[in-house]
Image (tube, rainbow over all chains, first blue to last red; front, top):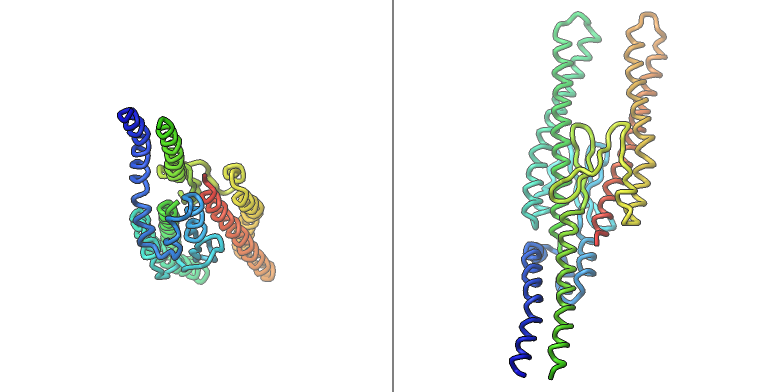
Length: 183
Length: 154
């Protein structure tokens, strides 16, 4: 009787341990992030059901960005509280914001690099283009004007391309950060 | 005594179900969550960690975002806002660029009334600013739509 009881017990425990181990492996990163995160409700996390807690965490912590005439406001949670602004030569530290997720930090670094290059090239291109237009309108026979216009358009296009790459990286950074929130 | 293994089995099944739900939730986001990425002037909606493209939004071409995020009511609402602003935004922006181009062309014609050039330039600039504003509203609605969709992934 005793052996039957323990055999049944071990059979019941096997699937639990397998699934629990798998769940733990998947959740390790998230638990680590929740430990480093500044979320005040982490104390209640263990007491509340997983689904409710994850939904609440996403509701209050998940990030997105919204454009505002050349800049982008970084917003958090359902209320859309602005936590910073990125854009032309703005020095908001996105890496620090998403520090809880290593993949997000890598993308944020990529954003910083491309945003700076893009801003610089776009501004330089615009100035060159405007100079070309001014030279053309003042003296149409000046040989430098087409060169300035072509260089300017090239600079603006190159800058726009890098700005686009930058914002794609920012989108990925927030995607990974939101993914690594305890869900 | 024989009832104990039965109870244990039921308890273990309940635990397995809950743990499976946790795994499913994680993999759901990993495989189904959306994001926006730019690609040579177009906007791509990509899905999951692999970044599979599920739709491309560009000049005069779009994707039915409302259908894509139909599982979430809030996301669908924002997707409708996107659709409401995107079309007019593109049209006004294009008209503005064309008007500005026309004003540059007219300015090169001799003996043309200066007020025509000025009027065209102002109209073109106004249309561009208005169109860009509508497009900005559209893309912000798209961002919110995707945010809500990802949030409501079960």
